[in-house]
Amino acid sequence: MDAFCGIDVAELLREYGVPGCSVAVLEGGEVVERRGFGVRSVGGGAVTGETLFQACSVSKPVSVLGVLRLVERGLLELDGEVDGRLVGWRLPANGGWRPRVTLRQLLSHTGGLSPGGFGGYPAGAVVLSLVEVLTGSGAANSAGVRAEGVPGLGFRYSGGGTTVLQLLLESVTGRGVTELLDELVLGPLRMVGSTFGQPLAKPYRPVAAHGHRAGAVPVAGGWHTYPEQCAAGLWTTPGDLLRYVRGVQVAWAGRGLLGPELAREMLRPQVALGPGGGVVGGLDHVGLGPYLRMVDGEPAWFGHTGANEGYRCQFLGSVTGGRGAVVMTNGDAGQAVVGRVLRAVAAAHGWSDLDFGRVYTPARAAEAFAGRYRARDGRAVEIVAAAGGPVLLVAGQEPLRCFALSEQELVAEELALAVRLDERGGVRLEQGGTVLEYARVGE
Image (tube, rainbow, N blue to C red; front, side):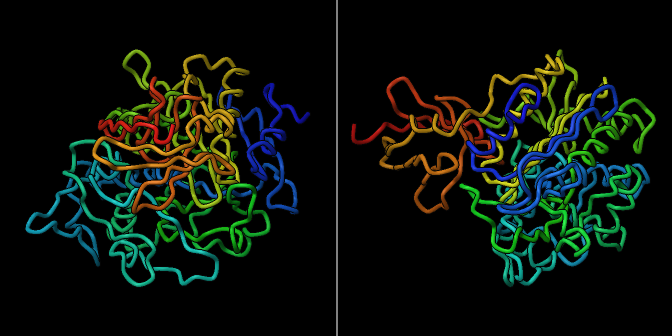
């Protein structure tokens, strides 16, 4: 048994078909655990504390720390409209109406912008320019960024908004974000094994974990490239990410990269997450960058999840007390591993102010959901208990991978979507405050 905080991580990896996992734990402001489990790729070398993983959407809060440093320097304004400061692209109008989006809204996912996320580009594909991504032109595999809601009226997870943020950074500084974020964040925090560089530079490749689909099927070429660097482009280790966590904690205490006023604004709740949108650990609000867990009306924990093609990860950090944990995996089914490892770490270290009532359970729990369902208006959905976890099938959409929180609830990563069994055997789809009811068909 390869025991860690009372659980057999190696067995957990086998159960979910995830080749590797790396974990680091912070206690009292010091790193007390750095462990690797499994392998970097099927048939490859072992995962160690130096193994690089794609940080996926965890790239967003790390990027935001750099943005706030520019706010502090007076180059950006939190409540200033961003469109007029962009070079080479503007937010498109919706008919005769043009949205006005502020920097604060970009940082808190309240700008109403699409798309939610990006799939990256396979090894060997032409790397798109940032403007091609924003316009959805050329060889782009995602729609262009545009407003699909009124800015400021609610939470809408937005990788597109963070990509606008990337253009804003480059526009106001005249520099690429790889170099800029190294200077603003990675260098000062001594995250020496990390890079926002896309594609991944050759010197980093020998220690990089390869991504894997469900069932440990390798991603062709090892990994995808993400020109959306601020949204999904960071490569890092759990140990380096704890340096970011510690940097935020020290800033909150008034002696870090940010002054205390902006550090506290970063961890002030901007908006609550909708049904099904809570993050493992009980984080249910959004600050400027990280998700937040509020206790007695004050921020107690911050964190973020991440999901790229073939990778899943999450970090948690306490606002005070110097506690934190990072779990990174190289498999599409890795969120199940992440949730269970974080719960074990919290239990072993006595972090009782986190809430793990909603935690991922074995994929076989999804068998209770498998079937076809129909709404009163005739619309139908189907849930398939596929290898690696349940899949939601909706007409006209790509299959949507979900994970089981319990035998009665599924969630879709990076979307505010929950699927719950009702007492009659049907399902309720909850998204953005809207509830849709479907009856089971054929039974």
